[in-house]
Amino acid sequence: MTGTAGKTTTVSMIGAVLERPDAARVIGPAAHTVRNMNDDIGLPLTVMRYERWLNPPETLAAVLLLPFRTLALALSPRYPKVLVLEFGTHSEGHLHWLVKVARPDIGVVTTIGPAHLDTLKTIAGVVHEKGAVVQAVPAAGLVVLGADHEHVADLEALAKCRVIKLPGRGVELAREIARAVGLHLGVSTQTIEAALASHRPEKGRLNLLQLGDLTVIDDHVNANPLSMRLALDTLNELARPGQRRVAMMGAMLELGEETVRYHEQLGAFARQRADVVIGVGELARQFQPDRWFASSPECADHVEEFLLPGDFLLVKGSSSIQMNLIVDRLRTRSDAGSPPGSPG
Image 1 (cartoon, rainbow, N blue to C red):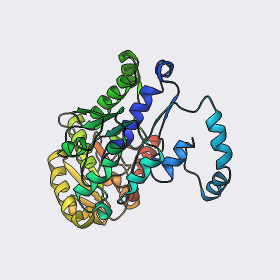
Image 2 (image 1 turned 90 degrees about the horizontal axis):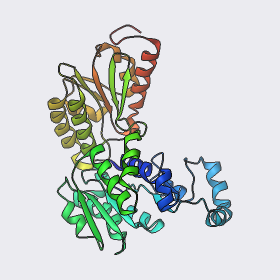
Image 3 (image 1 turned 180 degrees about the vertical axis):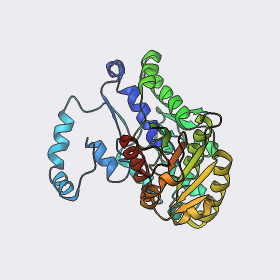
């Protein structure tokens, strides 16, 4: 499965459904992509049943042992009958190659929006790239599309099989997709709902944390205009009346020639959803924030200067901005019992 936003959450939810013991009795053992292993290294590692990234010496050993591991996995009764794979991209043609590594029987696209425009150039390029997952599904398969974006018809036209279009965004859409995939594979509604009720989000993906007097949405793993807007909407929807909404927004990378415009537009949107906007990273100046920091360590060092007890806080930005360092600082202060606004 792929999409501009919501890939990891959706894969996690589908995995939670299909890996339930009751589901396994119907479809056999299942497994899903973990740790964002969705590229030309991570996806083959996932297929080969590695559950973490390998460092260079381990990678060399893995290559040397590849024939033996392949034989062992082929003979193993525990190798998954169903793999829920996340397909990422970083350049034109990348996804068209990845679907040949593991051709999907069920293809999912959550949504389409601006991302990787430094290499894909246009939204049409994003549609063409993400559409590789739809095109790869055989006539006997199933394609599931998020319906709340303007490129649904373009993706549907690429399908050779039945297509289901589902409304919603973010976690809501991920749940609906997990339900559709589970039902298609014969999993009972009772099993699906039990799995979704007990599902916990992946680390750094819209995690709701209570850190002392602060409520924090930790969504620090990557960012693009679509996922940023979803996170800001979530901040606005979850904050209680009168609770101050603080958006700590890291720069968004890989947006090509329109980078400045996308940051300016998002800054204007953020002011409709938050009371205070904090920018982190050089491009984040374009948000026109109330306060700006050159880096996440600098922001973390000064975080107590602009937070107040009871604030509802969103932390999000591209992975390389390392917004997780700000969340780590907030955790440390909470564990130490230092309230916001104290000298710590």
